[in-house]
Image (cartoon, rainbow, N blue to C red):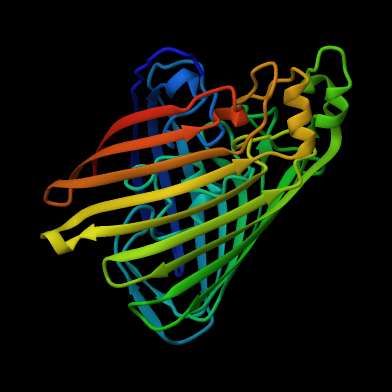
Length: 380
């Protein structure tokens, strides 16, 4: 991160479309626009402060295909529940127990690592390590999308889902690698609700395994140039897990918790340079002060990296988001709070946001950093 004060702006807009096809089938198409930049080019903080900023390099707004996928639901019970119209969801009825197949282009976080209180940077917490598991190096291009399939078993008692998806051709790159024999990522998740309605707890356990042309931290540390790209080799892997829990306190408030880990031996390939992370937070609507469509949130995060990753950065190596040429290692600690103000008819919101970052990029010689944000959001 640059050392002086800095101001940046970003914009994203998504046009969501969906349609019923044949029996049990739905199709979804999303066109998206994004532009602007994160602070310091979205570098210098592993748990970056804007979930809608990408490391593109060109700040000019661009329109691109975000999602194009088919969803087929096969009923396994005769009981149905009504689902309302929403983002990437047409109004319909689903069986209480089902088998579902998704095929096409999508974001893995559309289906995995969901959390009622901390998942959407457009309306909830903005930090990368709060919108998803920090150590889940989930398969995606630089804008967050991938191609592949997802299979899900759903019921009121348990949810089980598995996916195989494409990884980028290079670390944090824009293009996906479709040579699935040598390059792929598997994600597996089990979700289980507990307790009665109104005070329900949900626990989600996620695991992932990625295989592709990655560099190795330990080998790169021994090279003259400390350039991890020179150590890339077919067959390198990364594996990890995440535990995600949410506890509803009442109709308006809830707690959430995440912890995640990956082996940290080979380079980060898609998301951000976090090898282990833990977060805890609270969310509440404004019902008590007669603002039921407002939302307040507060959370803390601690991120870390593996010993191999530490040694690489300390020796002078750089990743695609962190690296100072040296490293006085410490956990990256982040505090975030926001207040989402409902302005008009469930269409417009304005959200002041504050984040405080200690040891940005794991360097005790850096920071702390204060980040003040104002987010405007509209839905039609």
